[in-house]
Length: 71
Image (cartoon, rainbow, N blue to C red; front, side, top):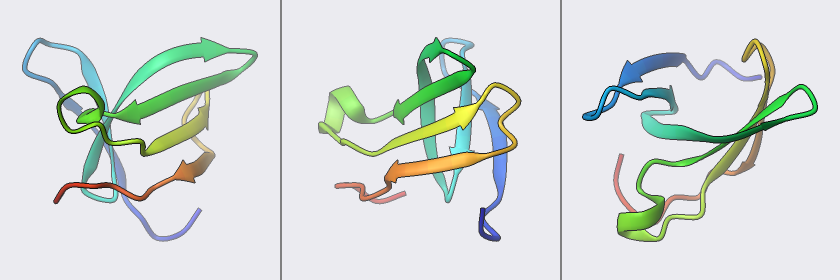
């Protein structure tokens, strides 16, 4: 992992969001010791950015961090 800061914010409806590189992600599934995250703008902006983390969110595997919108 690089020097990118990771934090958590509460969304408008109370759900936890992961904030990574000034973009927010929502957890869409948890499977085999991993959490799969999509950009929180996936539906409204059709953004395809994705992250995969371990359950403790110690390791981040940035699958696709190209966003089609500003942070």
